Length: 114
Length: 115
Image (tube, rainbow over all chains, first blue to last red; front, side, top):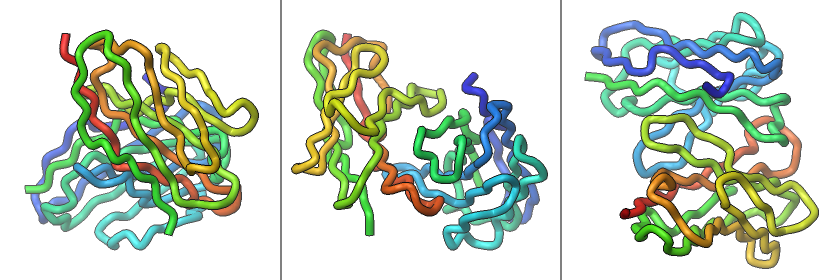
């Protein structure tokens, strides 16, 4: 384990479903991130939270809705997704939103939209 | 726009062969550089990082990388690969320290080591 825990590890959902991804860190980090990893594409930053406030939203479609209730937990709420949203969703944390000392990644949630 | 290029998409080597994976970035200012590794079915792990000082950085598992500022490169090397090095390798760059959206990843290089 890295210190960043993501659940579930795998998720299959229909286009009309609503589901949530969960991320938890107990590293004392102040910033948390959602990344999307698709085949043959660079990791894409989706959301950044610093001390529970959203700092960055990289023009992500509204069918992805993040929630950060405290500095240790981060959620990604999913609804009416499209098949092209199938990917590995990675959560990461860092000491600061600038991330200058590196990021710690979770194992990811493999999402398949059918 | 900032970008990180990893030109080798898939590298296949025999055990004991030497490895060099290329990484180039497009940014003229101060950078922090990283190599991450993702073993099959596992999470991204930090292999090594460069912030300043000696441009030759040594990481875990015998990996090293050299920062060549004039070439905007940060290539990863290992003198003798093992089967257990089979994984995907990602180069990443943080530019300056302002703002939060400043970590850029390459597309990754898949390394397959044949026993």
